[in-house]
Image 1 (cartoon, rainbow, N blue to C red):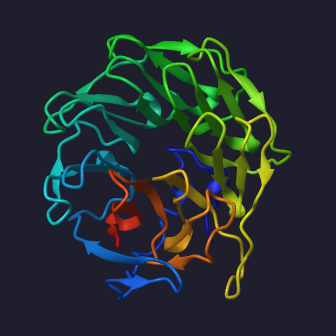
Image 2 (cartoon, rainbow, N blue to C red):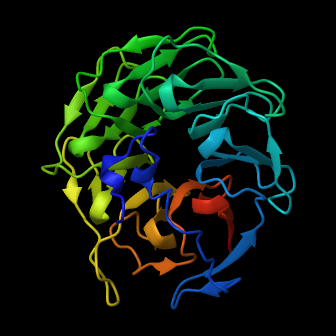
Length: 330
């Protein structure tokens, strides 16, 4: 029986399809979509069978990925070689973010929060005195960052992570993703169609309306006005007024589609060029600021949970059973 992504919890590993049989990577090293720029897909050897939930590259050479069983892996050569790094925990890790090439953070199950100051070679535990799962960590400066998680949990630091202060989200819904444009402006998304916005650094969070109960997994803004949120069963919402209104642009099933797939991560690398990854290795691209998306292409049998672009030409995706693929755009 297939597990549903819309019941995502870090304790319930089955809910992200972690108990499926090992994935089979397609025997395609590169391809180009018809009428589109060339996209070369490289299969990388992660040397782990863990499910990789988050991947983050600061440059085209240096990156990290994290996942089940406390897995942290690192590359310094663009993914030609990956090495395992001891995290000091066996908890499922769900998000990784580096402020620079030395200082980074990971979060995960049961309030797991870990910190590195040596490029991820060693990690120390930071206590939040809470047991809720954490799903997202990001910083907008070396001092200011946020954590989000289950039960509507939002925590902020203004001193580089030495102290974390809980913010009032006004919801009990799990919050899976967020994007902060600066120290004042941010948007968070989660279960039951939840979208929250702050314009004052999280002192207040206000709900925004999508007219949908779809679970939303990720959100991204290219500027204060234009943003997108993605979620289960092809859920895709777009705003051009900063979230005052969200337009439903849910993905159609497509010619060979038998069901709407879950969309798990979205990133824009220019105001026009956007990427979405999701279940069954599906990748979508937009060249017109998200108003239309190509039909999509499955680049692996694995569901893809992580997506990162350090620049407009180089990207990485990560997913089930240690899957890591590089994306090179000509």
